[in-house]
Amino acid sequence: MNKFCCFGVSYSQIVGGRSASSSGKGKSHEGSIKYGFSLIKGKANHPMEDYHVAKFIQTQGHELGLFAIYDGHLGDRVPAYLQKHLFSNILQEEEFWVDPNRSISKAYERTDQAILSHGSNLGQGGSTAVTAILINGQRLWVANVGDSRAVLSRGGQAIQMSIDHEPNTERGSIEHRGGFVSNMPGDVPRVNGQLAVSRAFGDRNLKYHLRSDPDIQDTTIDNNVDILILASDGLWKVNYFMWCQIKRLLI
Image: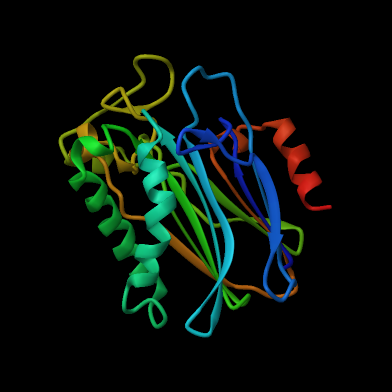
């Protein structure tokens, strides 16, 4: 594998009240793996609610690639919190190096509990998340909550590395928790008629009816792997301009 992409589609990014770089690129310390990211402002009137992570770090004698898209709703406080804390929480798990799967799952849940405990500081909003951790350029771990998606190309074949958490597909879990799924208003299935995903960080008012545990997949990285793309749902709903951005970032 020699290329990663990390995309947020709906809005231009704002950090600390100021616009941040909307695109960029980088590479691993050895230069064998490249990555790029791009965030595009859509037509919505509210401020930016999408945040990303794209970087390589050295820790405990290992090189880690950390990549993520956090697609917020009802404000940008929760995705901003995830950008700052989620990967740190994962790496602080004592079992991370021996059991990444369990550590990622525990950190997702612990992070959601921390978000809820902050109360009014983070508001009533929430966020999806799709994260990818590349360990020493050899092992890839992808986790997701919500409908932001990761797709891997191996030998020219697309492999979805995440699972879309949609209200209709997890209706049983929602109803078991006392909620309901409704297409009103509009024509999109929503939890209690409000949220179009069945798992998310935050969303205090709906939390009794939502889950925040991630689906996790892992794979070995070899020369047959071409690219990994992380993106919020805007890209997967066929955004032609974003596909042009992908091509530009990979040149």
